[in-house]
Amino acid sequence: LSSDILVVYLSQQVLVFLSVVLILSHLIGTMDGLENDFAIPPSFWGMSIPSSSSGSFTSCDQEEGFTTQVSNVALEDDFKKGERVVVWIECNGEKHVLCTLIPGQTDQFSLGGGVVFGDLDEVAFRHTGTGTVHITGFCTLEPSLMNYDDEDSEDDDDEDSGDDDDDDSDDDDDQPPIAVPMKQLGMKQIKGKPSKDDSDDDDDN
Image (cartoon, rainbow, N blue to C red; front, side):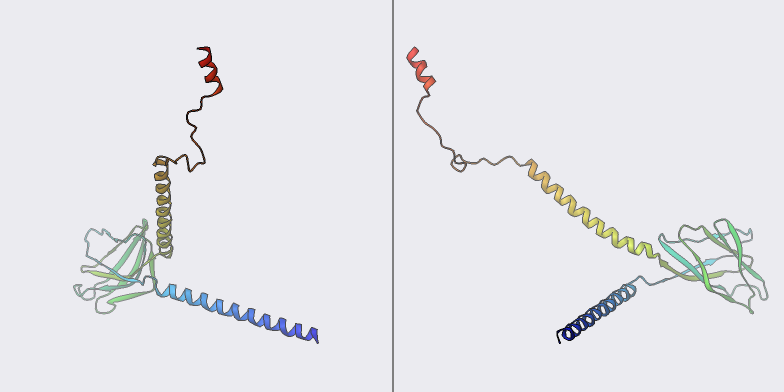
């Protein structure tokens, strides 16, 4: 009978343990979901590429710490009908054709997964047409920088608290020692009783 009770008890403990594990797993998943919900959402990005008879590229201005994704290329309505427009991209010195557009037939082109580049990449665009080409997409803050901002603020708080402790210790060192009365130290002042050596000196005189 005692062995049966022990088995039942152990089974109950195992069930309790598994329940706690499931609850903790659910809480961890909920916290991860909340962190993703509060992440900085992507923001719109776009630039206009004017016509260039010299074939020069227009540089892309990027924000520090952001990743840019180009998703669409479109023609403005200032092109000649039937004009063939070749759009080029230059990234870190390498030049490639992005797409080819024809006004009235293919006025815009979606890049699907997009062309992605970071803030350290040197990116520029140009086209062969006579009008203006609009390139659009979105930019997002790099995940590593999101975590870096949180760690940075925690490090700053730690440094501030450390500086406060150092200042307190410096203040303690600068303070003069506090005088303690002799009575508090258990010392007694002896008055008027000359020592033996002093009395011998008086007799000699």
